[in-house]
Length: 474
Image (tube, rainbow, N blue to C red; front, side, top):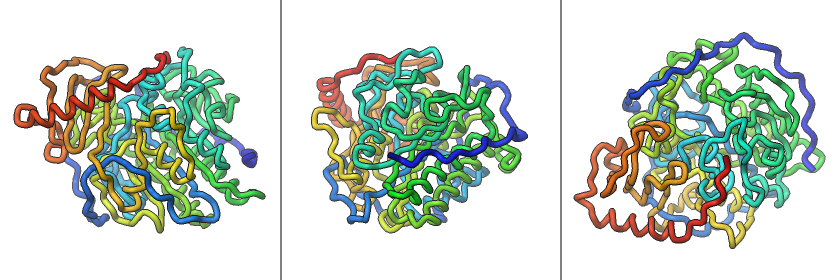
C-alpha cells in the first residue's frame, strides 16, 4: 500500500483577492500571440501521423513516474511561451525550453466533465456516456467498467494520487478512491457550484472552501505525496494527476500572489499555477527523480470567453470553451522528461489528451484490454523523436453530436456554434479549413478540395459504424 498521507494543518484563512459575479458577453476579442520562440529552439517536425507500437524507453530500476498537470479553462494564448504579452510564466517557459512544446494539441472535449473522462480513460466521452457537465444534483458519474490511467498503473505497482478538481461524479462510488487512486485531496466538481466542500479521500474536511489558497495547498499535497513515494520504506513508481481548480471562475489568490500580474486577477491566478509547476519540478530535481519522471502540462478546454476580464484568451484561434472551434479545444501542452525528451523542441504533431492513457500504459509496459476501444494513441514516438507514420484523425463532439473532425491538416465542421451551443448552425455541405494555413478558421475551402471532404466523410462513416455510445450520465 502507499504510505499514508502525512497529517498537516490546514492553511490559515488568507487575505484574498476574489472575482465578482461573472458577466456574460456575446463577443470575444482575439489577439495575435507574440513570438516567444526566442526561448525555444524550433525543431523540424514530421507530418501528422497515427501511432504505432513504440519500444519501451530504456530500462530503469523502476518504471518511470508520471505527472499530469491540468489547468481549468486556460486558453491557448495564456502562457508566455505561447505568446501572451503580459502574463509572466517563467516556470512553464523554462519547462518548455527544457522539453517539448506542442502547437497542435487538443483537449478531447470543450467542457469539463467530458474532457476529464476522455483524459483518464483514453476514450471519447460519448463511449462512457459522460457527454455533459455533471453538477451537485447529478446521480451519475464515471461508469464502474471504465478503466482509468490510475487503475491501470496501480495494477502495475504504482502509487497513485489525484489532487484537485475531479468532476466525474460526486457520489462516493464515482470518486477517485473508487477509480484507481490511493489518495485524493480536492473538490468534487467546479468551484462555481454549491454546496462546495474540500475533500481528503472520501471525507469532507472544509466547507466553505477557502478557494484563494487552493493552488498552494494542492502543490503542497502533491509534493508531500512525491516525497512519501521517494522516501518510503519501499519506494514505488508514482502517478500524480493534478487538475487545478483554476483559472475557472470564481478567481481567487492569496496575498502572496495578488497584484503581481499586469493582466489583473486572471493573470495572478495563472502566475500562481506557474509557481506551482516550478515547485513540483524543483521537487523532482531535489529528490533525484527528474530523469525518471515524465511531466505533462495542459488544459481541459479553452477559455470561458463570456466571463470577459475573468476569462483567458485563445490567442489567434476562433471562439472558446463550449464550442468545437479551435479556440474551444486546442490547448497549450508541454512535455518534460530530462534525458528522454530533447530540450527546446516545438512539435507540430497533432496530439490529444486521450493520448495520455496509452502513453502512460506504454511507459509502464501495460497492455490495454483488447476488447476495449481506445481512441488515444501513444505519444512516445513523438516524445522520443520518431514521429507518426499516418495522418491523425480526431473526432469532436458537442454533447452527443459529432460536429467536427480533424484529419491531418484539415478540419471539417458539420455544425458550428457560439458558447454552449448558442446560435448553432448546421452546414450542408460542411465547412473545411486548412488549419496549418488558417488556424483561425476564417476561410472555408470546401469547394476547392472536394477530395479532402470526401476522405473525411469516409472516416466519419467508419467511426459511426463502430461507435457504441454509453448510457448518458446525468
